Length: 538
Image (cartoon, rainbow, N blue to C red; front, side, top):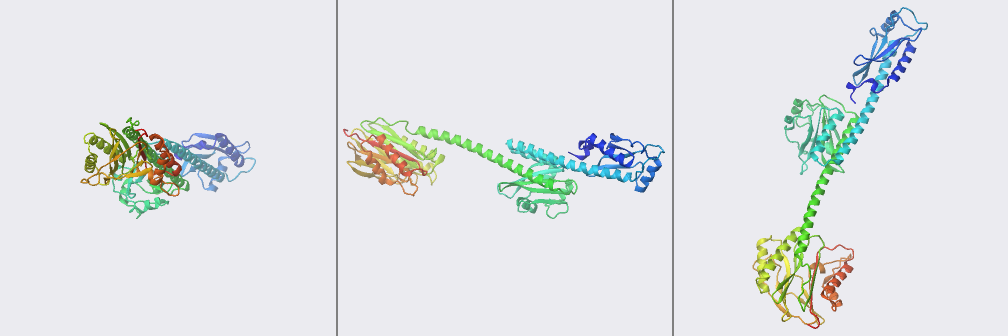
């Protein structure tokens, strides 16, 4: 509420005004009238019967008080006249039956009392308006997700609510030093182009972001102001600056400017603090909302990539008699770096298990590249060592130095039940044969490191009851709450326990033993397993 466009009846009812005038008239013997700032009568009261004062008597009272005739007492609020109280001139010469004196003094006392009442009422109205505006702004800001609209709405509301010349919001840049003007109300573009404001150079903003409410009485003469001449040309006098801080996180600075030197009340200062906190929270909410949308976008992409990766893996176990073959992939994240594959060849089956360095999308893309390269060369080249060399050279050329993969590639010939394999730095495959364990390690270093690396191969005969198990390092590296690794020995033990079962059941038993061992401890890596079993009667 602004006193310049308000009426006394906005705060005091006409009935209450007439009651006050009735008591005044009874006490003084004079008639009295209240007019608004435009001279319209709001309430009037004639002198009581028997107490009509003559003009001469009124002149004597007025002269004794030092006022003009007829006495007019203004009702003022914040230096503005919102009404007048006037003693009425009855124009008769009769004297009252009872003596009444000091009427002009009581008149001005009444006007002063009404002014104070209205001042308190205006303050209450402004406080209520402030609370209402704060509620409206907080409601608007909480639902707004456009940062530009949030800031523009805030600075405009600050100017209107606090009745100041201008307002501005400056936000810290990503480096936390440059204060970038993001929203202004009633400041010229010429003033905004005056120069940069760095936090390291602005004492005002340093104090504001430290939690102080900084007041500068006159920008043109204050040594703390970086551009005093520009402020003078803009017609700016006093400023009040407050940091925009949300849960200890500095966001920026909010300032209000006045056209004339002005002091700010405690209510105004608290109001500015509240508005700054609301704006800071709204900005932080917008940031969090953008981060959430970005997270959702990335999550959708990850889900798509995960779906693509799973389609690269075999959708079912191969039918390759007399061998019983099964594979399983259990990623610790949505996208893993492990893979396994079955490659149908003439009278043979290629069995592959690989593990690329890293996790997430990057590892998934590298995995797809290695798998595609190996499949292409395996179908074109018969020698395993040459296949591995070609895949290695391709990966060295197409990847970064820190990107590499370990791969076990075996080819099972159904005509003679013979396994030929090559291991490129991979975990040793386990061959369980007649109650004994053999680790298959022949090959070379991981692919993608040395373009000139040469690989070796080895052939192994497989008879009835033999079991071949390939696994990634996620199997042996699985740890329990005591930090103990599952290790190769437990893999062997699980194979031996399930040796009489099918290839699928052997894998399930290994997985079950790993889960029992790990418990609720999170797994750090993917688990990938392949089992090949030769039936007893093969």
